[in-house]
Length: 170
Image 1 (spheres, rainbow, N blue to C red):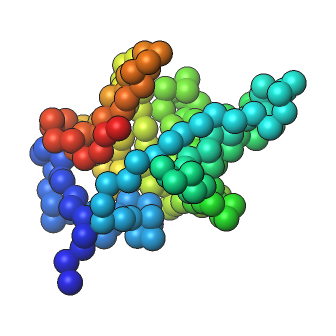
Image 2 (image 1 turned 135 degrees about the vertical axis):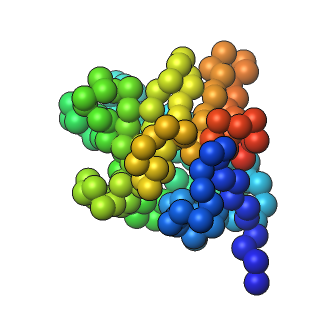
């Protein structure tokens, strides 16, 4: 039976290179066959302390899907992506050598190189290149993210590599 999702290989990459299962970057249980609308909300746990915050991600029926938590002591810059039950899916850590313009994303609570899943590099104002872990040379990104943060027009588009092929958008 064919997978219900399609992976578009970025321009100039070899589809025969060793990769994760087709279409899956994080975990197959997080894949769905149809587009999903998500709502992202910034929440503060204590109105007097704006540093204690988290992002809450829900579907259109307001079911909790994910949370992005920051530690109270934020010198590390680390963030964690949790599923609805509180299970830690990813750990995001800034690569300090790049002065916060690059983030490494690891599986679960790990910070080991073997659990590196991808790296996100800031390339412009609200523009990012995403390099999957197997892309060691980082000459061509695997995904490109362009966000628009204007007050009434907050949108995001994810492209396959350097192409104009849209793989996700809001």
